[in-house]
Length: 355
View 1: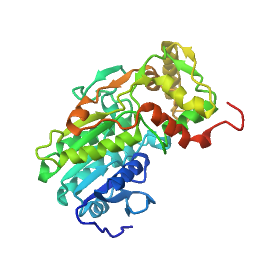
View 2: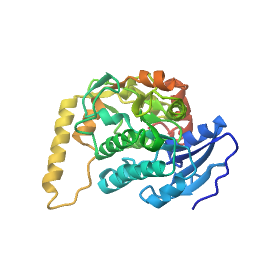
View 3: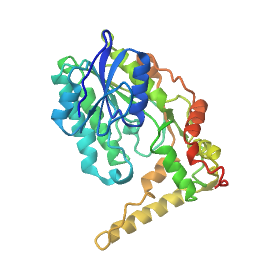
View 4: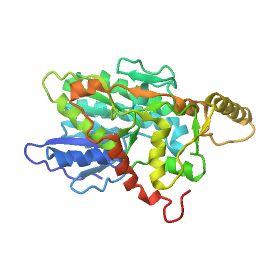
């Protein structure tokens, strides 16, 4: 379904892929609030946002992508097949959406004369399970990405950056880390679900490992600033990738506790030796592999890589985004936590007794 575009004089025409999703909706709202954009959305479902024109379609369909991009001067490519539920093991879907879909977006931008393409990548593209301490964009891509989703984000980012300068197209890739906030479909709901199962009482390792979590509104803000930076003459950001964080790293397990406790759930507190837990996870994975020829067993969430993620430090330096994009997070972590907890108050145990 394609609705007619009507641009007001002086406004840029932009398209947000994945505009019905978590980050997409926040980005669309900020684009509207800026008063500088005529916004349209391309997604597999209607975004249902007032004042926004909608193109319902599939990134894997080149003709639909071309129709959606036509007439735009800026494209924000946020759409992705996220590593949730059945998607995690669906390598074909991941590749078709995250890689081939990105190829379709780039081809459409080139053929339709789009001037700017801002791509939503992931900070995980440099993470292979080992600690990241004050790492900047000079870090190489992970030789062994943590999952297939991350591998496809690496491939997508490479495609976007390689397209910079082709046919007058300027590109930039943003690498947000640990996005959370109102409407979050993954971090908060899954953490609460695990807490209800009694699985969030434990800390794997010392509990001192730091993580750069990032408020979704700040990530959306960075997208607008990246587009503005690309619009300048000889933009320093063109063809480059940038980490986007709140620049306030917090202890990983402490942050999860800051989300859970106000909702009535127990904070993670009991420390477990990570090497022992890692060994058990390896053993579980081996058993699943040995039984595979005889019995179909659902993929376990208790994997060695997840254990390494839970005890690793992931601290990223976003100073280049500050320098080249003018990025400075507007919403601090504590305020962002308050907004998030308030939004998810319906998941609270209060009224039924703390869990």
